[in-house]
Length: 422
Image 1 (cartoon, rainbow, N blue to C red):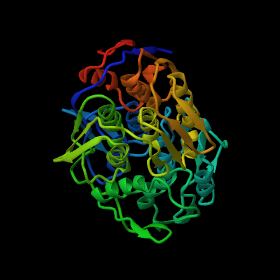
Image 2 (image 1 turned 90 degrees about the vertical axis):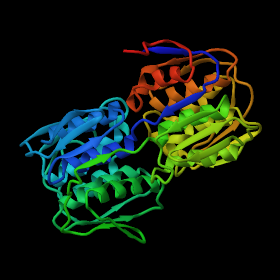
Image 3 (image 1 turned 120 degrees about the horizontal axis):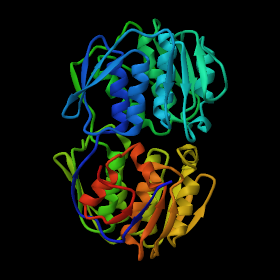
Image 4 (image 1 turned 60 degrees about the vertical axis):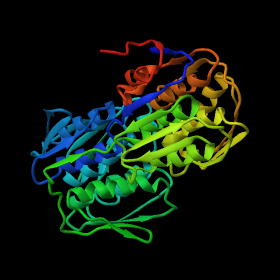
């Protein structure tokens, strides 16, 4: 396990947003299933994206670099058997399991880290009910059969990725598919990202009162070229840094994006930070921060870094509907509480909530729990600490943001530990 020691100093300046991991997964999958080659623009590449690329290649697609952040993705013949190694990427597994099942692929799935323990039951049950058999109840497993269309029933409060996976598979099913919710939807914006990606490839998704319908007779049609949006989820770390130290600007962001994590601007404004957004960029500057109430349901990926802002705001911040954070790369509720306590904050942890009292942070040693978002949140916390912050497992940032430490340095950050520049 590698560590990084981050010195307490403000960050400031301007950075371009990296490619949205959420958008990239979906565009790569649509391109691999299309009727011809597609040039996919990715401003950056993360480990999770690489696992999705590797799995698509295993399913027969050709994915070749075309220079300047472009990738040529072409559909190919399905092999008789294949291994899909999903790494630690929940998106890769949950998106491609229904797709492989719809293709009738004799596929084996593998994963690492906490991925074999992350929830899959509702999706597996629906696939089994529509013609797919599994060799084991959890990873690693093999699947057999070919997915039949029809009606699928899924909870909306476990993982939106289950729904996205079935939506992506639906155009491959002769009868199309209807997905009905059995519980209220959380993280609905992730479904809107899926709908937008599919629409770019000519597939319409109808919104129902209790779910979605993909009518039969549709197929993925290549638009020739697409580009992944800038990533609001990872931009949020730098925007929160702006609230805690000096102004920070992130460029290359769609202000009307379907990405729900664009809500970071509204949350930071409610904390009391100064927020400006126009012409595809956002700037956040410090202001008198005060505790607020945050509903984590629509924005679970923002909670690690927003918790850091809360620890620097006057009074209590209440975070509710956060139980799903326990099912991520780490038990993020426990990891956030442990991180902030290690740095000197007062935190009360509930089963699906956090209460954080803002105050001075001392610095110290933090266990990242091998979770990329915890690494980056701890690095941002160092801005307001009185002493250095040492992060165990700091290399985990590469899961979603391989150049995080380089960009941290570009904004004036100073750290010692794992090599920053290749």
